[in-house]
Amino acid sequence: MIFVILGESFSGKSTLLNEFEAAGSKRVLSSATRAPREGEVGTYKFISQDEFKAKIESGEMIEHVMYGGEYYGLCADDIDGENSVLLMEPNGFRHLRTLYPDKVFSIYVNVAYDERKRRALEVGYSLEEIEARQRADSELFTPEFMYEVDCVFNTPDMDDYAVIASMCRTMKSKK
Image: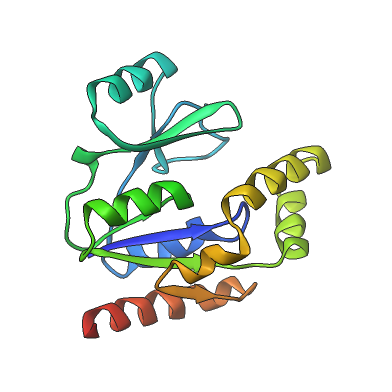
């Protein structure tokens, strides 16, 4: 099974991904052209824009997006199939679902803007950066999007994320 976690900026996607990983799922690392953030380890394969573009041209990338002037994407070789978990944006998820229709289980973490803004400010983002990310997110995460996924969780409490990961793994095994 390929678990896909989706959500707007600062919704806690990485926290939920960590809970899946702790429960035994294998993290799939997408590629990114941005520089790693301070202390960021094991979140992306960081590559140059030239290398990324070459992977697009060669057909290695099964999905990619430019966000904030940087490329993010997933190579077919990165997915090793069973019991994988990864973060994606909606367009990449839609494409992945067409490639692996019976293997993808999607989870949308829906957290209110005020809470996401609080989290972003807490880790040092400026209001301008937060608002720019919100504008970009609002184009990707439309109100209709939540009807495309298998599960929607509306919780700001990150303490719930271990329970969410366990519930999703159980629900998918019974499907």
